[in-house]
Length: 256
Image (cartoon, rainbow, N blue to C red; front, side):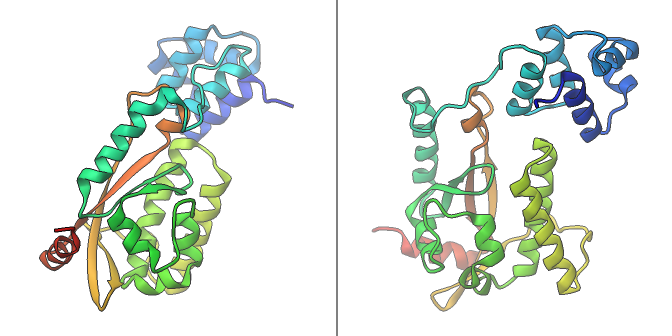
């Protein structure tokens, strides 16, 4: 059976580590009203659900969950990525990846599934058998070729763990991300390295490729101005050279 509005609200309030009083103060209502909403003694309006969602910093999917639990229509649609209405966003992402060459770039979803990539990224990943549709989480955990190619695998695992924890906190719960976090924690513990050490400002991933080591750091871009759940969960990840040798190697690979 579907969870009641009160249970869903209480769960998200707990995930955000907010008391009833704290949520009430931020939303501009009484703690008594929040208590009544959670106990089912009061029924929320659509405006109240959206206000509480904003204060809890809920992603679109969670806002839909809260709205439908209250018997209200969802606020966001999840269209197929091929939908004609999403064409301008797809074209923007493709243009960003193309303009980023000769440096690698890719598009991944919330589970780090590789949806698209530019030729330099394709060249880097092909040696490990990674192509469109592959899960980068599974590759990092289980792909022997990729793990062997990463000269600083332990650092990359620590950085990936920190990133996954942040993404999991945003979504609240996600079995795929939770499993990945658990496995990375096991790997780091088994390596004997510190699990909670302070990360440096820049952690480049160092790939052994073609007899040389290429070092990259990455930036991540997301669509903020979209009402579509699928597009809001996409990440455009662009890799930049972390040293002059890597920059020169990537420039040399560029056509012309």
